[in-house]
Structure formats: structure tokens, C-alpha cells
Length: 220
Image (cartoon, rainbow, N blue to C red; front, side):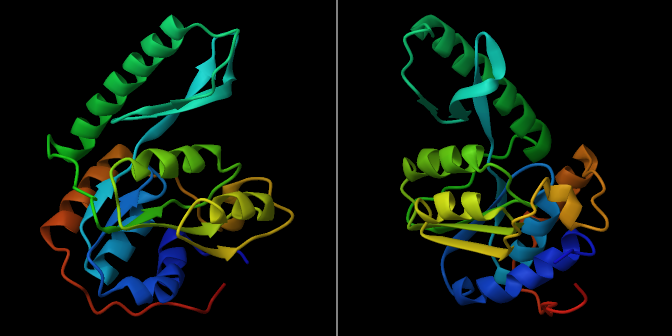
């Protein structure tokens, strides 16, 4: 399955998420690529829209190798003898400062939405290894949501298996074995710019009543 663009993927996901339309919920987008899809789903479900921001902590001698993950509220770190507590504390503080700055830029100083006792739907335009998403799920559990649902158009089978074990529900439209990168499953995978993220967040939260949107299940 190859999607025409993020909008078509969002319309197809909406069909699978319709069962949550009557719940008290929140849609959390992974910036930036997940925002256009999350915006559509938030409108469809009548949920408010927010961002979920999680970033890995890299090993001091190999920044690409993740030893943990940080959100704006907390961190999860693998205990390692070759990594000092001072490094972890310093990196956590640095990353969180960057996240808060970026979040304020996107949300114009609006406070993060309360997710306690709510159905939380985390949305991205696709998942590769799933490591960051797994950390996101663990960190969000500390905020006591009712359920955590992951909704993405595409992810490889090995990742699907890992996330299904941690999320309350995992909705994925296609799980190809020939997965190389998310972009290969979109005909239009244009970058999402900061200005679009800001506009969609503002629009989504000024009017999150349920729209009469028609989900799309064909043309893929």
C-alpha cells in the first residue's frame, strides 16, 4: 500500500478510530510529520489536539546510540556503567530545555493538555524502529491516561509487535516486510514546515467539534 499523501492516510485511519468518537479523549501529534494526520483525526473525533515531544539521549561516545529518552516531564534511562549520572542529568536538562522552547514556539505558551483519565491517541506519519514511540508510551503512563492508542499509517512487522505489547491499542494500516523508510510509502512526502504545525494546532484547538468528515478507504 502506498498513500497519496498524509491527508489520504488520515482519512483511512479515521475509519479505524471511529470507535473512540464518543470517548473523552486527546490527540497527540509527533511533530512535525504527524501533525497534519493528527489534525484531521482530532477534527473527525471532536478531540483537542496537542503535541507529544520525546527525544532520545545519545551515548556520550556514540550520539546515535540511544541509552534513554526524555520528554518534557521526565526521562527513561538504561543504567550503564560506562555512562556517568552527571552526563545523564546534564543531557536530560539540556534536552528538556530545548523541548520546552520548541513547544512554546509551536503552542504560543499554551499549557499542555491534561491527559489524566482520557483516551490518548498518539499519531505519527509512520514508525521505523519504534524505540522513541515505546519510550513515549512509558513516559505518558506517568500522567495516568485512561488508555494509550497508537495510530499510524505504516510500520514494519517487528515494530508492530513491540508496540502492540505496550499500547492499549495499535492501529496501523499497512505493515510491509520490505520497509526501508516511512517516505517510501507516500507518493507525496513533502516536509511539514514549522508554520504549518503552528497553523494546524491553532485551528485544531479553536474548533474541535466533530466535523462531518468522510473517511477515505480507496485510491491507495
